[in-house]
Image (cartoon, rainbow, N blue to C red; front, side):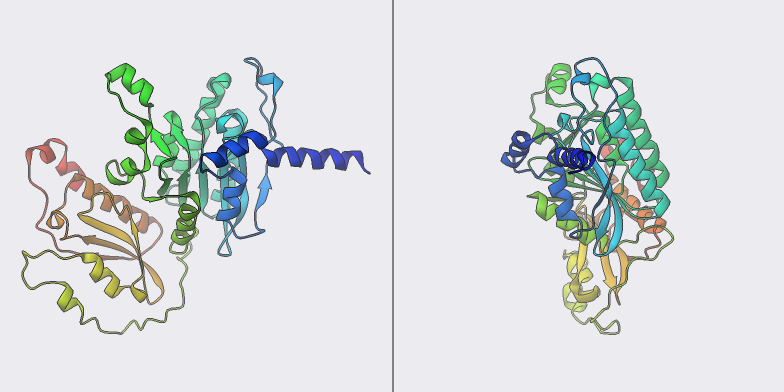
Length: 380
């Protein structure tokens, strides 16, 4: 047997094991998949090509020299979703808590460069304890490299963040400036400072879920666009979203063959929309009547519910939908609804997705709180 080949195979085996069987079992006990299991579920079978498998840190001190795990806590590479290429990185919580150090950050930055140069979507699976404090400023520089690339790629390629575990401190800023944030319920958290720091500084007692869980970010903060009760369902949602959007800002969105006659009439609208302007109705019924086969992917469904945004198809073409929702606050526009609509419109504009706007609103929400919080600025 070739000793070099044997050594490489052993290194690959160790890299695929991540932090080892015990830590993998701990992930599963918490209802979480490992980084590699997540990629297997997200990508088309057999399409993932890994890069940087043997990368490791070069830090010394604080015991770091005693362990140099292959991959440095993040799995990077490319694969396909429904036959279309994507670049991915998946943080591995079983290896040093998925913490971001110099090598870890460079691996993510490299795959971001490749996605940008290739003009294909970038998907990040986040499950990290944050910056690796043993590496000090080198770890923070890793975040800087990532932030720079997020900004450069904005409006050029779609960027999707999937939060599958803790995401705190500097780690939350990268997902926040990507196009769509997905969070799994109960096990994913996003906050600048955790419950212990909040209590120490403000004397407010709060747990992680109440501070930055998926329900908070999909209903109150608006940071997350989608949530699901488990990882498999959430990853399936990511695949579904990608069926609506283009690979880059120079490529049209994928068109699906439509079996829905684009010239059909919609007499049901006369029943859905009441003659009495004071009577509320659910504008989703209008959208579903217009869309091919009634198919509508709503974005930020539970945030600022007085405005509906999302993707539908008309004659097979992806179309962005922006609609006032008379069934909630009479469809009035407030600060949160303004921000929600504006950000979605900017995304559609960057990627040349046409818009259909359904208007039924009494106007902007009056009130001292709205005025003092800048309804003029946000509404504009």
